[in-house]
Amino acid sequence: MSIEVKDVMGRVAIAVLEDARFADIVAAMKRFAVGAVTVIDADRRPVGVVSEDDLLLKEADTVRHAVSMFESRRQRREHEKAAGVRAAQLMTSPAITVTPGTSVRDAARLMHDKRIKQLPVIDVVTGRIVGTLHQRDVLRVFTRPIAELEADIRAVLDDPETFTLEIDKGVVTISGQVRRRSQAIALVEAVRAVEGVVDVVADVASDEDDLIVVPPLL
Image (tube, rainbow, N blue to C red; front, side, top):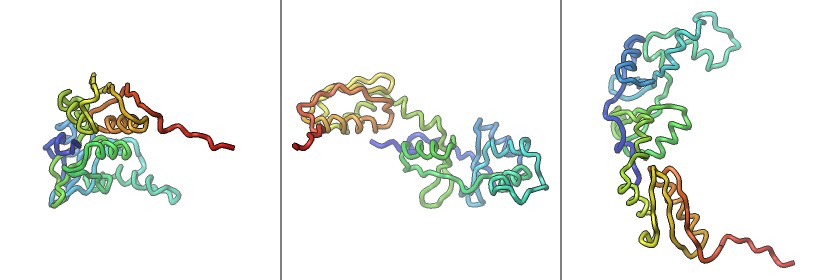
């Protein structure tokens, strides 16, 4: 069973409006102990995100007016953020979002690829923010009850009763017998793909090795 964002997300939408002041943003981050807040429009739709890195430019970037024509687009944007006082000026846009039905695996991949620690969760119909997904929420899949994890693992096995499973802190040891070696490899990959599995130790024997490449006769 695929675990979705709605199963682990926080129901509090950590967000500020576009006209929120610098101090209001800092206060929101401190209140919820987060490193970023979503910026929403008047209809509660995410339009961007302000992170601690965005706010730190106020101290790190001392350039305000003397902008060089040789600067990159990124450098110019950093100068603009450093001079900003409202969320709309400080935010990174557009906002990267997920929906309650997004799989946790896809959300984790998105966080990793984009180097972000939290994602606003939006209603798939209205586009309005309904919650926040944090990295710690995603990591909760690795603390699932063993019985629940074992049930999901056996659900991906063709003949689950023929295999023995041992689970220790997310590491799954699977023992049994299959007909072909390719089946053993596919079985291990299927188990590894189950949410909450940290690693797989395979002790699966096969009757025949169908992966051996026989060289042609000369």
